[in-house]
Amino acid sequence: SKRGKPYLLTDSQRTELFNLVDSNKILDPVTALIIVDVQNDFISGSLAIQEGELIVSPINNILDTYKFDLVVYTLDWHPHDHISFVENVKKREIDPASKVKAEHAKVQDEVIFRIPGYEEGRIQTVWPRHCVQNTEGAKLHKDLKLLNNALYINKGTDPDIDSYSAFWDNGKLRQTQLEAELRKRKVTDVYVCGLAIDICVRFTSLDSIAHGFRTILIDSACKGVDQQSVEPSREQIRKSGGLCIDICEMGDIY
Ligand code: VGL
Ligand code: ZN
Image (cartoon, rainbow, N blue to C red):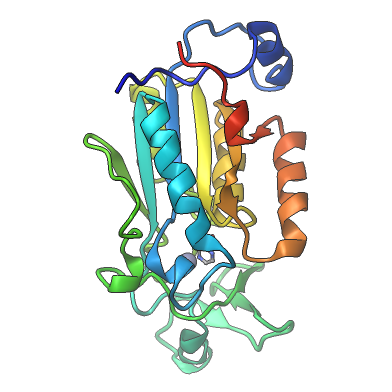
């Protein structure tokens, strides 16, 4: 099969849409597709997202239709004692050896964690145990097409801090390899899809924009955890300079 690069809209439309990020015309984009967290626990497991399985075939279609210069699969990849698991809050309330201290939950599902010596607490939403390293729930969905030469990015591997973005942890303390790998390949355009549009897809997209990549969220290849926050997430991405499109708007192949 003949696969070409996705070519989005006309060049002047592209420039107009992305002038918040970069006003230079890019006539020959270098493209990456980031496929976020298409893992069993988010589809059929402990954190199953409504209609999550419906994004697998659209993503496979994108991979069959377009040739990206780089395809990235991200994985939520938590140790068993991860801070985001509701089962682990108690230990951080009572264990004096714990690096971060949990305060009693003020809001349902949200816990404030304090690092001794720091004034500011960090609010962490707690979730059912999910995507524990090397478990069935952490595996990519069995029907998701895996390309050769793809890049795999694990996130949320530090027990004491969560990571919604595939670029940074939630405290922006440490970066993953993702930015360096995109720069190494001189990527200009970053397409994002996967789970969940209101959490990890959202924060990955916002960081991609912040890094100066033209960022295109492929709406019809995403699903959300909380239906109320799906549209606000899109709006935030648009306002920050990103673009939300449908697969059918990905344009002609060149
Ligand atoms: C995610 C909740 C917790 C996601 C990850 O991938 O959107 N959501 N961890
Ligand atoms: Zn997680």
